[in-house]
Length: 344
Image 1 (cartoon, helix red, strand yellow):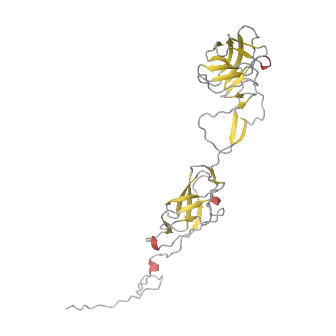
Image 2: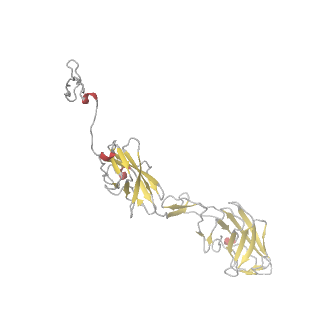
Image 3: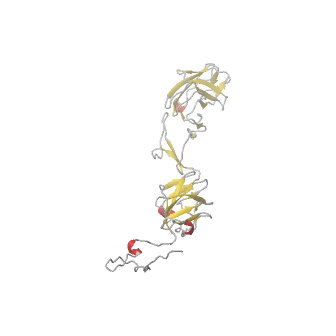
C-alpha cells in the first residue's frame, strides 16, 4: 500500500514583465530583467554587392570574387549562383563560402571567351538563386524552420550594386593595332645610313609577347627584314661596280646589324645588271670572315647574297668588298640605296 506524503501547493504566479526583484516584498526578477533576449524571425535581406578585386580590365581566365552582403547572419546550403551580365550570353558566379561573421556570401566568376562588359554587374535584381534542396536562410540551430532569405538584389547600376561599387571591365576581344610610330613622339625625321630607329606599335589593350616578333618595313621596292640596315656607299647612293670587261666584278657595301646575326642568316640585295655564272661559287668577301658571298639570278632578277659564316652581335657595322672572278656587271649596274635593296 502506497504511503501518502504530505505536499504543499506553490504559487506559480510570474512577476510582471521586465520588473526587477524586490526582496522586501518577496517579488522575483522577470525574464526581461534577468536577460536581454531579442526575438527576431525576419528574413535576411541583401544590402550590398561588391568585389574585393582591384578596379581594372580583366581577360579570359581571370577569376573574380563577388561578395553579396545581407543584413542578418546566413546559413547556406547547396549551390547558389549569381547570373552575371557578360554580353551575348550570360555567365554564372558560383557560391564558394560564407565569410567570417556570417553576413556575406562569396561567389566566384571565371571570365570566359566572348565575355564582355565595360562595367561588370549582375544581370537583374533576380539574378541570385539557389535550386532545391539548397537554401539561403537565417542562421539558426535548425535551418529547416529558419526564415528564408529574400534574394532580391539592388537594381543593377544603382547604389548597392556591383557596378555602382566597382569599376571592373571584362574584355576578351582580340587586341588590334591602334598606331605605329617612332619612339619619342617624333612626327618626322631624316635618317642616314647606320641610324637606328625605335618603332613603337600600340595595341588596343595590354598584350603579352612570346618570342621575338618581327616588323616588315617597306624601304623601297623591296622589304627590309630581320632588322638589318642596308647602307650603300658611292655617288648618289650607287655602289661602285666594275665596268663591263673581263675583269672581276667588285662591289663595296656597308651595313649595320640592329639585331644579332646567326650562322646562315642571308642578306639578299637586288643587283640588276649582273650576269655571269651564278651557279659557280667563285665569289669572295675581302677583309672579313663573317660573311661569304654568292650571286643569284641574272638581269633584273639578279641578287648579291651575303651569308653569315659566324654569329655577330647587334649594332655590328660591316664595310665589305665583294669580288667575283666569274661574273661581270654592265656599266649601269649598281646597288641603289633602298630602291633595289631587299634584306631578309
